[in-house]
Length: 339
View 1 (spheres, helix red, strand yellow):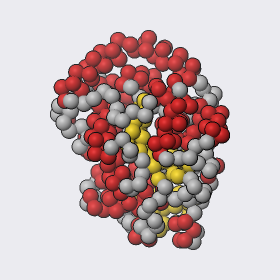
View 2: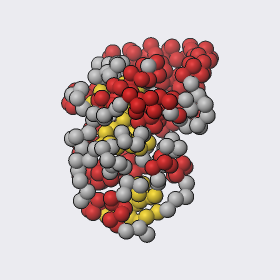
View 3: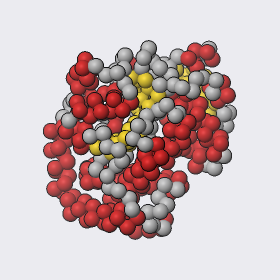
View 4: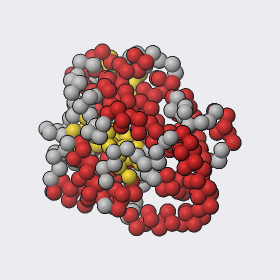
């Protein structure tokens, strides 16, 4: 077991899990270089690593609260793993991709925890995730989109944090779901099930039983609409200085301009050398999950094939979703666009 002071102060000791039965956080050793080769900070990718031990939430709350921390929220299937990987650059920022500890907070809340206990655990978790890896660096945390209903809480706990909501346009999102097949069609239903528990679907004009009669792509569209409404409402409260959005298609069309806009929003001192390193690194030339060579041209060709195969279904769902959005007053455009 590692020394408690080391666990608290060395960011290479990742706060991996919230152990709610003990009101403590469990730490796992993850070297900085290891983050760059893993798409997600989950057990499937982390594997067997050194466990440093558990530290009480009370002790974790003794860490500074004004940590250099920002958030990259996302709608899924929008290049968020690619973006957070690009931002992971020594001397500029450290990218943390979907840390499991934040998912634990969702489970804690859904099991009926007191909202004050959830906020306390989230306070400690974000202090831990915001520990700087190097002088002048910020931490950019990309939560799983399971966390989106807690975005307002996270932003309230860390008032110095800026956030970007990265999203794929609805048609692109639906193409991604169709392209990924049965597993992804099941996943969008699991996401909607969780959002129903979180109350994130309320006000969209549906009863819970309605979703049993909807197709997989309709369910996917409902989840997409719920996220857009959530971040539109949050942006109205926070203002463009704290929460902006980025269209994934626009990012892929002009990654240099997107990186300039995102780093400026976060207040990161990005130089042209930093930008060249980001653009020339693996983020924009490799598949973010498999690591295989991949390009925007290959992605466009893949999506064209899916559009050809599933175009009729996607087109019908687009018309239906736009009608739903109009009826309940949800904008199809994300708030405060960076580009």
